[in-house]
Length: 86
Image (cartoon, rainbow, N blue to C red; front, side, top):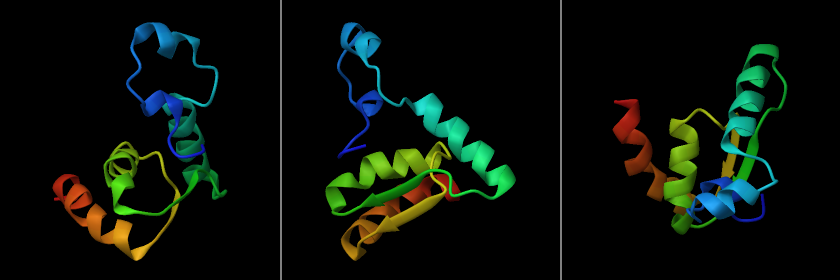
């Protein structure tokens, strides 16, 4: 995904309509299908607390099967994840 998936960036309807890369719907389908059959699914590797909002949203939307992160991002995610796991 190279930083952030284009479908997560707010570009406006015109630019979003031209996006040809992977979408949130694609990620969701892959993650759900993988959970059912035990494949790797959506594997996300990320570093840095500045990614907490986007990774937290991906977790909330159940779009991640495996998450590889650094300690800084893990600490920043605690607040994001705790809100919707409670």
